[in-house]
Image 1 (tube, rainbow, N blue to C red):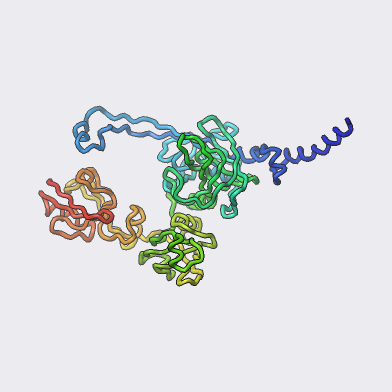
Image 2: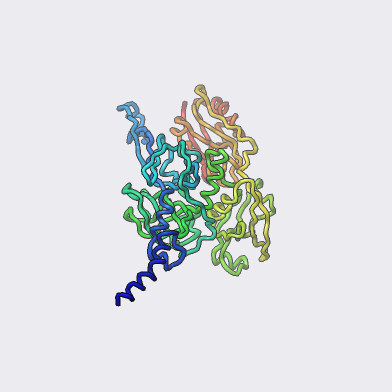
Length: 459
């Protein structure tokens, strides 16, 4: 009996030694323990403490009646607002990725490593829409880091670990699987686009942390959850590593804001009813409803009615998916777009470009002697349309900032001024003189979306 036990222990010894020596590479080894994987990856996941100074506002500030009444009542005092989250080191020289909502507008950022070393950090590049930010640790060298995995190789059902700092209790590891891919429009917060879904428990404070595979490679940055209680319900979302790689690339190029390619098209998903009408065998893709004349897709020969089914061989089924694929390709590169026209499929090369700032926007801000001091205006062009989220065919003079007086009479960013008094408005420079001619009783005709606005006021 004793001999049998010794033989059993000797048989287990190589397996135990293997588990302690390297990352598990088989299901049998993973069943033993995730510990070797965590030891490899955890040092590259950091805690981020961010603080920002915010100006206290009166509760009546936005009220049209009481805002003026209590304007000088009390002195608003600035206060310090703190946020807590996670981040991932991506290079030896201290490049860190996190979420925008963790560090957005922060005045002081402290990063704490797993071994309790602390570093100050500066923001290199941040984007609220994608909810990503790239930081640089000050005077950091020889940092532990994670490598990025091609997100397109990730499959549903893969084992993953989520590493972060939930609720500020300290670094925590949770396990699960990839439960979905190509999730778009489902994440909470400011993030928009394409996500990896996981059932690995993610809680507040995990934001910006790592979602890794069984080889210790980063496949995504944890960003949000769907929840009713505030805790994990098994539906979490991570921004794919391919998007993170593009952010790091632009940060190293010296950009401070993320530049995503401009499509210049209006499209919608192809559902079952639409696919039958178009003669497609299965639903899928994005049908083009309209194109801006300067759109790179128009320049490549695409037309309304064409269906885009893939970008660089990866299927796209919603406009956010298509924008994600374009963003991963990057501005200046060529994407191979698969389209279907009249039932025939072919491939078209489309050059990724930034929204053209042409014709010149002729940005204008009215001065202290003008009727609506502080009103900022620009000529509508693809860049302005993209910045303000205007309809694709917008033209004319656009309000970019109404200023305090413009806001008081009802103007908003994105409003298009068509006429002031008897003067039609075709250029930003015409607005100031037209206001002076129309005073003291001024009528502004504007357009907001598809609605016509009439604003009347006295100077």
